[in-house]
Structure formats: C-alpha cells, structure tokens
Image (cartoon, rainbow over all chains, first blue to last red; front, side, top):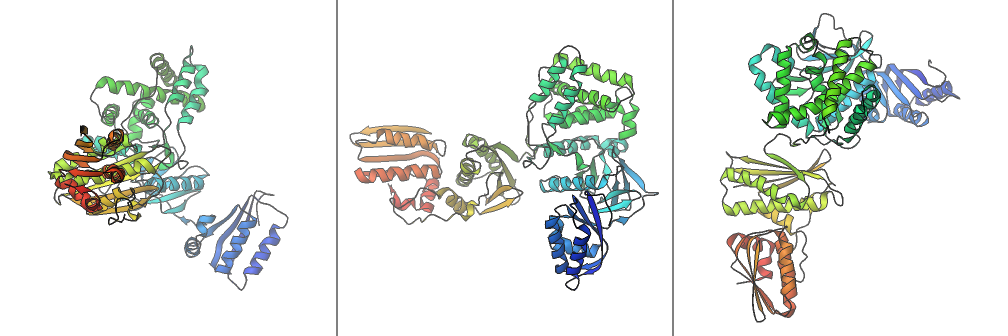
Length: 528
Length: 98
C-alpha cells in the first residue's frame, strides 16, 4: 500500500478474484483502509489475471464506500470484462499501457502540447509533454467523440500508450497530409484547400452543441480584456471590455485552433484533428485565433509562419483573406475589411494579454500588437458581426421553428420540385406534407420556448424523387406513431386533430422518424 | 388567399382563391363566424382555390358542424387535387359537395 495520508491510496490486486476468494480479498482491502478516507482509491490490477462477477461485486461495494475508486493497469482481457459489464462507465478504469518508442519515426505535426509521429503506414501517435497527460488525453477523446456524434469528421484515438516518461494517444490516420503540407507543396490545389477549409468552418459553426457539453469561449476573452484594460490609454480598456462582453453568446461549435495543420486530407476524406480546444461561441472567437496563426504572431518575423506552417507569409496572407471572404459569402471588399478589423481587435487583445502572461521578450512585437489594438479600439464601436449560420449545404436551410418561417420552407422545397419538373398535383401534395410537418414542429417541438429547425430538401434527378428531412432539437416526438383518425365517422363525431400527419402518410411514398443525437429527424420521400 | 362574400337573402356564398393553409385558415374562420348569423345556406365556392391543408379542413369541419343545426353547407367547384384530400380524409362523406 502506498499514498499520502488521505489523498490517494493504491492497493495491488493479483491472481484471480472469484467466488472462492472474493470475501477474503474484500476483507483484506478493508483492513488496509481501516479508519482512512482517501479521496482516491486506486486498485492496481497489473497482476490481476481474472475477475468473476463475485469479484466485480467487491469492486462495486468498495466504490460505494469510496466514491473516488479507480481501477488501473488492467490487461486487455480483464479490461474487456470491465467494459462489457458497464463498469468502465461507472468508474475510472484504465488499461495497462503498451509501451512504444517513437525513435526514428517521422514527425508529422507539432503543437504546443507535444508532437505527432507516424508509427507505421496506418497509425500515428500524438505525444504529450506534460505530466498530466492522461487527463488531457481523456478530455480530448471525449470531445472528439462528441464532435463525431454531432457530425464533425474527425479521428478518435483508439489506444493510450506509454511513450518514454509520458503518454501518447494512437490514431488511425491513413496517408494523411495536412492542408499546410498541401499548400506548401501543391500550390495548384490552393483553390481546393480554400473551398474545403471554408466548408469545414461552416459545417462546425452550424452545429448547435447541447448545453453543458462544451465550454463557452467568450469569457476567456472577456477576462483577457479585463486583465489588460489598465495598460491601454484613455478609456480604450473599458471600451474593449464592454465590446467583448457585448459579443452575443452562442451555442455553436468552435474548433478553437483551426489553422491548416489541424485539417487533414486522409485518403479522400477531410478531417479535423486536435480537438482539445473545442468550445462554443460566436465565430469571431474562431477567426481571431486563425488570424494570429497566419498573421498576428508573424507580422515582424515572417519566418515564424514558414517554420510553423511550412508556407510563406504571402501564402498565409492570401489564404487568410480568401477563406474569410468565402466564409462571409460576399465580394464586397469593404464588408470583409469591416469584419476583419473586428477579428483583428480580438486577436491583438489576446496577444497583448498573452505577451504579459508569458513575459514575452520580443518587445518590438509586443509594442506592435499594442499599437494595433489601440488603433483599432479608437475606431471600432462594436465587435459583433452577423454571420450566415447555414451549414453551407445549399439543400439545407435553418429557420426559426415558427409558422412565420413556413413560406421560406415551402419556397425552399418548391425550388427543388421545380428542378425535377414536378406536376402541379404532386407539387401540392408535397407542399401539404411539408406544411403539416413543419407546422407541427412550429407548434409543439419547443413550446412554450422557441427553437430552430433544419429542412433539407434533396432532388434525385435520376430517380425523380424528392426527399425532405426535418430536424429539430425539441422534445422527442414520433408523429408516425400517432393513431390515424377514423375517417368513417360523421361530422359531429369527428375530432379535428391528427389530420395533418394522416394526410402526410397517405400522400407520401414514405414517412420515417428517427430520434438521433438529441434531435427529431423526420424524412419524407415521394417520386414525382 | 382572397375571400369574396356574396349574400342573397339568407344564402351566403364565400368564394375562395389562392391558398387555404395554416397562415390563412384563421381568416376564413373569422369571415365565416362574422357573417354566419341569419344565414341558413352557406356555399363555399372553391373554384379559384389552389391549395388546402389540414388547417383548412378543420375550418370546414367546424363550419359544417355550425351550419348543420341551422341549415346547410355546400362546397362547390372542388378541383381534383382538393377532392383527393377530401376523399383520403373521409371529408367527401361529411361535406355536401356539389
């Protein structure tokens, strides 16, 4: 037994624990813990060969007495028992770590927290410098899993390994090359990179994250503004704090470190990596970080961008401007400039604070950052800008789940019907189904609160079929389960409800409901 | 949607054109309720009506129930598309369609 007086106690387990010895094992452990209340009790299972359900019950009883129970060092076989029985979700259960060496492996990425090595053709390992790597790895795996569920293409680590004194997480990443690498080596693919990068930004910024799943980012910038406000002349500091506070809160996903090293082409798939900075907030909090990665940090020393991204400052400037322009969906240079200035203001505020926090020695650069910030604060009145929150998918629109949006929804679907050359009768039937379903969402999904709905209409010209998908994040409700009205009753006996979904079912070729990722998804199809 | 009312004695004709949907159904309901007093024959002319959803059906059902006690309600000039809606929902049997 080892550990401090009441913080963490580690007790080794060994051999087999089954009905023959479970009682004895429990008795021994409790004897060792007599009179102590550790905040963490670690059962070190490195030498444990087998555990039966009688043994698992011992673990469960110990967990009741010591809520901070963890089981570590499990072999793959024993780990599987913990996982299958759901124990891995009730407590911290960790496998024994495979040891790997990265000596001689190609470094394919490097970030603030460690390096990424390719260990073989299919796999890479991301290593971590700091001692607290395990909790960081766990965090990153959790957010990557959440992101994947919410529809972000990303890689999830499938194993944690020991790398020297620290830990690493292993990912499967086939033939991946980062956009930085592509921009540096294949300039002819520049336009493709811009398009995919903007598509990815739009995609993640369109994702509404369920409350509490990811941390909001805004307060970090407000805090930075508060730390530096007294160092700014006149009342510009107060203005900065006020303007950052006024940036609207948002439950949209932000990557938080989306420069071109963190977006990769793996096979024919574009993936995001380095998910540990995922948060929610207004897109300005995404862009300030991107601006700093390409321009803010390297204004006086252009070599920084070359060292970090592998392409030159000119490419960085151009990529920044082209992606922002495409993201904003405008060719009005002044409009882009206005948004850019707001982003730069947040970017320099962050850098000024960063320089103080890190006792940054490059005084010329620090002075430039501050002068840029002062200049911007002198002429900006707000940091807020409107963004088109659509997913960038032309077949999908996002609207308030309110009957006031009905016309926009009908028009959106109507445009796809036009593309199919739909006859008037089918058109009316389709419009009717769309109205019935959307109005149902508008009236009931979020009531009495308000919410959003997503309508995707896709015309398959080859099959001459229209598919419309309605998604809302309101209370779970399956309209297809609603009992059909009895259409043989007389007027007096008839109840006015239930007609809409009944008509929809009768007039469409198929109506399918699914509750997925916290959302109601209803799909109707009809051949035209 | 446009609503045109014509009254001849105790007979009221309401002609509809455009779309009878969630947004416009309350207008029709109000138009009927406002002018139904003293009417014993209500005629709904759907000749120019292009579209009807369940919100329209509900107004028709409620008008039918009201008129049944005091006289009659007839629905006229139903186009093929709307007729299908009436048939699928059993309204073809509830309403008097001329």
